[in-house]
Image 1 (tube, rainbow, N blue to C red):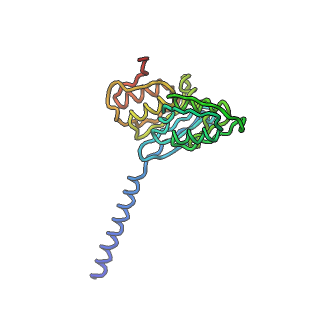
Image 2 (tube, rainbow, N blue to C red):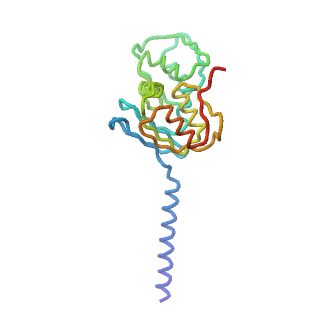
Image 3 (spheres, helix red, strand yellow):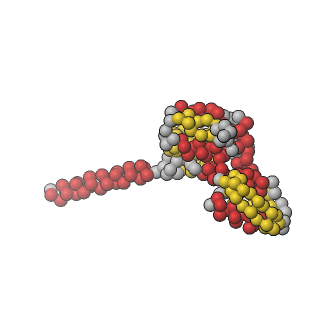
Amino acid sequence: MKYLLVAGVISVLILFLGSTGTNSSAALTAEGCSCVGPNGSCLVSTSCQRGCIAHCAGLGDCFAECSGFYEMFGMKTTLEMQNATYPQMVAALAGISGKHIVFSPTKPDAVFNAGWKRATLWDVLDMLSDRGTVQIAGNDFEKLKRLRKALLSGTKISLCVLNTSVNTFVSDMASLTGLPFRITAGRPMAVVNLKLQHVTLNEILVKVSEQTGTTIIERGPS
């Protein structure tokens, strides 16, 4: 009788511990961002502990990244090179951005002179893309350029943002679009959790402002 009682207690304990372990694992699992492009042209998803963002536009231009990824495109880049090769330039840009960059030039043996002073990383990569094919962190830069064009032209896209401070979101969107957005009211650390379908850039900013109680504007000339 005692043996059965002890066995029962052990069984209950095992079930309790197993249940506790499962709940802990679920709590540690980050919620993922996902979206689908127009007419099912593409589907992406990602999961990040500190927030994520996914954009889906036309022509299969779908991207899912951890929040803060796009901020690098707004980095001020100063680079001077004389009689440099493309591999030398790519290595320098990879060091500046901290991201893996692949470049396939149309004229591989060409040498060039570069003198950028506080140019954005986006503008440098844009120049490079005029001379070949660029990939950064595994993303086709031409597709990123099309996403920027879609956002700036008022084209409707799908968007998912989770567990991301509005400050980080605004920095990402400013660097992705090239527009000088800033927060003028509310709490910059308020968290954005939105999944939107068929919305323009302006509609996205309105929805984010409404959810977080912030005011986001495009900064005018100083």
